[in-house]
Image (cartoon, rainbow, N blue to C red; front, side, top):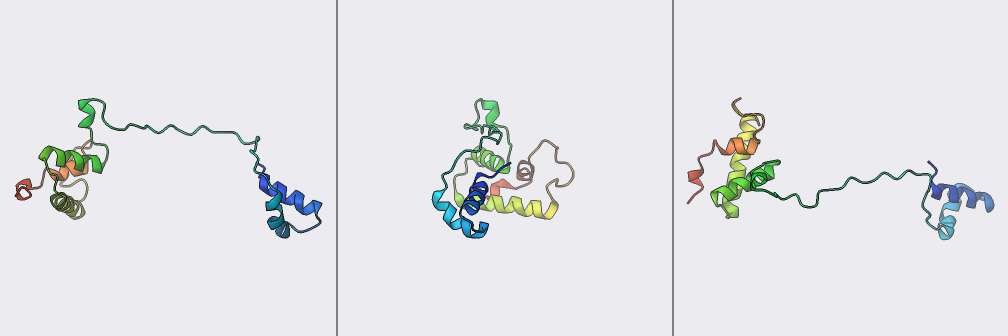
Length: 127
């Protein structure tokens, strides 16, 4: 592919009998940005704008760790930042200590956060 800026500087340098390095600063004053028609345009993939659940079943799907935490806190009715931090810290400590797969009984389709939340004594957070 041809870089239009480089071609402009080369032409400017040749027309004005100067080196390419010297022509760069001068050529910038006469350059107007043009679209390179030789480039093929690749369409950008569309990003899903509304990633929220559309059905009640979709709201129970856990795709990320954040989704798992949100579902856990929502199901327990926890809104306190202090308690959420404690739970997140305890779950992360369990993952660090025993690994994501835990004791070897974690189902493949289960999120690690959901798995380790089942092993916590959640009554200690409810004060």
